[in-house]
Length: 84
Ligand SMILES: [Ca+2]
Ligand SMILES: [Ca+2]
Image 1 (cartoon, rainbow, N blue to C red):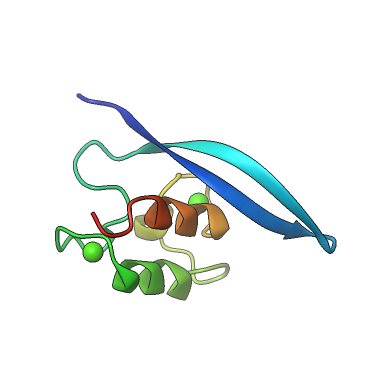
Image 2: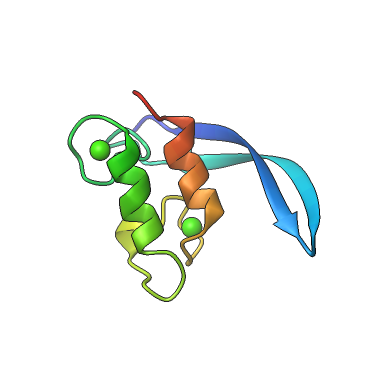
């Protein structure tokens, strides 16, 4: 099985301070990371779907880094592959 990672540069607002961090994420080997609706491309619809499950609307399908929550890191994975 091929393993891959996505690397994203994130800017997070924390307590009013912008924090820039570089993160690497494991991605699914069975498809394009961020293509949550499995239509073969990563676009705005995928971002909308992940954002729609942010926070209490948790669904593991949209938890792209498998950390048990849906947040900006999952959006960043979609953004890293946007347009592919
Ligand atoms: Ca898609
Ligand atoms: Ca997550």
